[in-house]
Length: 236
Image (cartoon, rainbow, N blue to C red; front, side, top):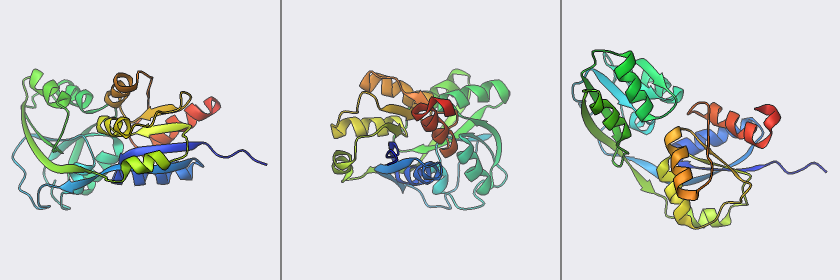
């Protein structure tokens, strides 16, 4: 009898969880979505975007609320290859892509796009300040426009309680870490924790006092590579 495949929890907002689970299952991983929240638009899809030399996207949810063509004639910097693809589909000219989080991309804007004096950050209603602070520290004016809010899933705690013990857990953001911690179920000591970025890995360490493996890229393929490498080091 063959051994049961490893169980992987994917704790993320709905759109990310569905996308990541599909790719993981293509790789033969028994991944299941534990959706902690869903994005709700705060603006109309034809919202008039304030003027700025560069638009910053630190999540794909900010692009989901925009109409196709919203980025025509505008340059953008993005966290993650998937975010960059979505930005191009909405008409943006993507001039910088990073995989290590918003603060890292913000620092690269100052280094690799010299002369940039203003950035429009399209973000969630609740957003960590690291990206903004990194831009301001370099003398760049930052305009912030919250375009979506995360609405917590009411059944998240019950779904966590009913889920089979995981061999690995993907947590998609610091807020996903907080939601899972609040659910009150302790993770198995041997379970690997995988994150799409360094900031979330740092939050894992601060919350659970355990190491979080940062995926090589903040998209589904990067997370799949990290999970497979953690579960079977010969595939790393």
